[in-house]
Every structure is written in C-alpha cells, then in structure tokens.
Image 1 (spheres, rainbow, N blue to C red):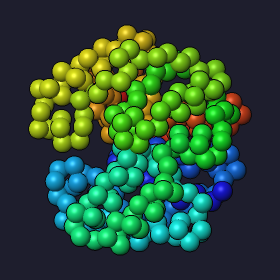
Image 2 (image 1 turned 60 degrees about the vertical axis):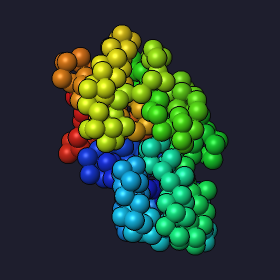
Image 3 (image 1 turned 30 degrees about the horizontal axis):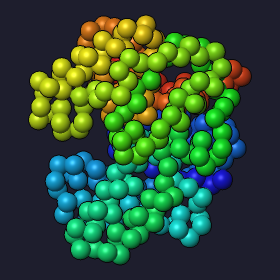
Length: 262
C-alpha cells in the first residue's frame, strides 16, 4: 500500500520519534510511506478552545494537502495520534459546517474516511496484529481519552502489544481514567489536573513497568513530566516505538529527538 503520513504538530515539533518509528514500521512491513510537505496543524487546538474561524485556514490546508487520497494517489492516511485522528474524523466537518462552508465540510469528511490512527491502520486495514516486533521490557499501556472515546480504537493497541516478542506486558490499574492533560484543561484547571495526574502516576508506578506506552505524545508529555519529577525511573514511549524494532533489526530514536522522563 501507499500510505501518506500526517505527522501532527506535537510530533513534528517536539517528539519526531513517533512519526519516525511509524515510517520505519510501515516500511518494514513492505508499504510505501510518503510525507506531504505542505501539511500543518489539523486545527484541534483552536477548535477545542473555541476559535472556529481561526481553525478554518488550517482545515482548508489539510484538505488541500491530503485530497490526493480521494483520487487514489494514496491508499490511506496514517496518524500517530488518537487525539488528532478524532479531530480529523469529527471536528473538521463540524467546524466547516458551522462556518457555512459545505463543500469544505464534505471534502474534510471524505478525507477523514481514509484516515486512520496507527493501530487502526495496522489491525483494520493491513490486517496484522503481529508486526514482528521485539521489545524485551516490562511495559504498561495508557489508553488516552480521545483514542478511546472519539477515535474509538478499542483494544487494537492491546492486541498489537500482546503479540510483541519478549515483552512483559502488564495492565494499568484504572486504565480508562484521564491523566488530567486535556490540552488547555491542564492550564485552566491546574489543581484538578495535578490531582488526576498524581493518581495516574501512582497507578503507573504500581505496575513496576519500565516503560509507559500510549498512542498520543501529548498525554505522554504530561504523564512523563510528572514521572520524571518524582524520579520514578519510568520512561514513556509511543506505541510506534515499541512496534518498530525486531530482534534482527533494532530501532532506536535518533539522538536529536526528545525523550520525556528519560
């Protein structure tokens, strides 16, 4: 398959290892990955804060950049983020409709129908649950709110992780609870956010995991920062980073990338 990568803002600016590992993984599985260079923000930050008119240019840019998928130039679009996948799948169409831009809304939704979060692409589109990964570490997984409740990826990340060779996977207590990030929620409600984070960190530490995995680096940034401050020794990694290496072909994030909680 020929797959277009939507890297997302946070991956592009702060945590490129998520996109790099995604590309490495998909190419290792035999697929062609392209990166449309005109891509930018999907507009989620603006939309979540109520800046609908300001989000419109971002939606227009996204539609223009990824329209080739509608002409069959690519087979699918992959996003290493449940949060951004949820925004692309629902918010862009809603905002365009509310701003009286019906054609933009229609095109945004058509593109969204070809857009998949990484675990969705692997399991639902490529039909693979065992990607041949090798990761000999004790790992726990945090299912981020948007991946569960908006993108609705379900148990796909768990199915992928449980098929990783040599992994010691342990379930996270109260896994479905929010970590307290929520974008601007953590800024507008810092006390509540901090309390939620403390509970999430306690649950992570209780697993004795070496690494906390999630499908969104926004939440990993929040939790990883907290784990680092309490010197827990727990690192955070994107799902793609766990699925990328094999026993014969290790994959390590380039030294220039950011590692939260390392």
